[in-house]
Image (cartoon, rainbow, N blue to C red; front, side):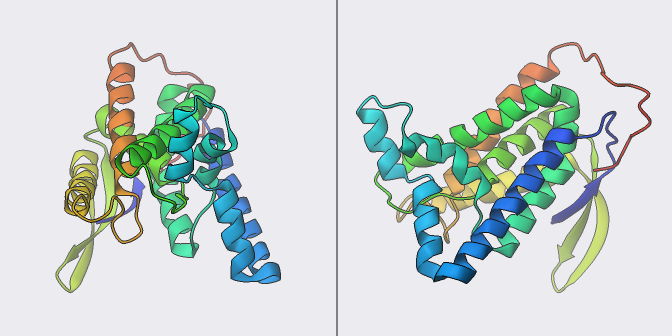
Amino acid sequence: MIPLRDANPTRRRPVVTLALIAACFAVFAVELWVQATGGDDALDRVVRDWGAIPADITTSLRAGAILSHATLGLVTSLFLHGGWLHVAGNMLYLWIFGNNVEDRFGRLPFLAFYLAGGIGAGLAQTAVDAHSSVPLVGASGAIAATLGAYLVIYPAARIESIVFLGFFFQIMRVPAVLLLGFWFVLQLIDGIASLGATAASGGVAVFAHLGGFALGAVVGFIVRSRPYRPRGVGTGFGQVG
């Protein structure tokens, strides 16, 4: 299933979500420029310098250096992507689900949640594959946290999705609990299957997805348990994700 949009209007313009999407595309444009002017080696250096490398993070944390260039990579890696499909897919999910989570959390709390989710996801991958020297890049971990929160807060929201039925497909509205639950199960299967060989399946940091999703779900339960006081009601924005 590939989500296209949700039928879950927001009350305020999702400024932070839009800014994060713009930042990721801007950084990806820089990556393309680096590759065009310096070749693949130059791009590899950028990825190694600003990606999150589990082995370096492990070494840094064991030395007590909580704030270091290695741990900074847990944040900077969230804005790097490995290709057009990678960045486009991540930004599609961020737009569909991030705007509603931002609307519920508030702008600054959502930004803090997003970054914390990405850091937590990177640490989850590092915990499973502590000696890996392969850089982690992409916003997937932070977006997975956003998906976890969305699932808990809006389980019945309808998501317009492309549903594949063998060689055919159909556009259908499915509940978020089905779409995101299916996504999580796939990640869990990939994660279990990868344990015997490597913590990443097909170049995908599966445990970053699982860790981010679990963290987001926990935060989602906390937010859902508190009274909801809508802000900015009557702004006239009300867009569909």
